[in-house]
Length: 202
Ligand SMILES: Cc1cc2nc3c(=O)[nH]c(=O)nc-3n(C[C@H](O)[C@H](O)[C@H](O)COP(=O)(O)O)c2cc1C
Figure 1 (cartoon, rainbow, N blue to C red):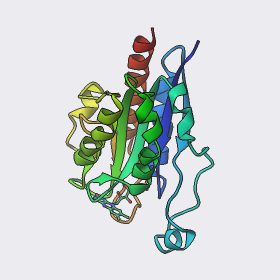
Figure 2: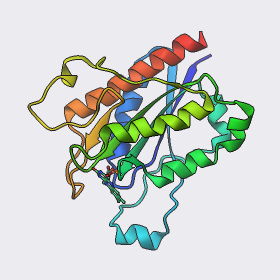
Figure 3: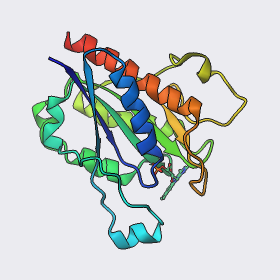
Figure 4: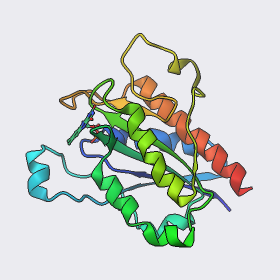
């Protein structure tokens, strides 16, 4: 039976969505592992989204928390809000209390990625503070470390991502799109997580 990885994201302006698609490529590069992308439900009213100049949502299905136990591994993606995960993602995690009570996600591996407007804007703290969600579920946090290789060592150009997980820099006006290096780390992260999920399932 195929190993299933769910990629679950929140994205207001599309940067995290693009990164999620790179993660999927990485997951699918591992034989016998399937990837499905989901987004979490929006919590802001249309009027507020309009004032924030948010574009329409992508077509990815909204995750139903009750289906989480069907997955063998997860990659969660969320933009930063003041150095921590966006409230929409937190609202999603808050719906998993019933699963927590049953220990339904215990032992499942998960990686995480993020997006910030700026360098020093919370690439590391956003993922670090999100580890509490995994810890309470008894999930296994799978960081990327420096496993993506030489791309992790370059300092010639600005880049998101860290040992904690992949990341992109969106720029303060949201005009920057994920760079080749950032997408490569996202792809590596998908491959890495898929490999761990496959070994654990076996
Ligand atoms: C309320 C709010 C708080 C934010 N806080 C930060 C922050 O602490 N650091 C930062 O670099 N960017 C911050 N941003 C910018 C977002 O992280 C950025 O828009 C996002 O990473 C883009 O990802 P997306 O296109 O997937 O929505 C903030 C944005 C909003 C609306």
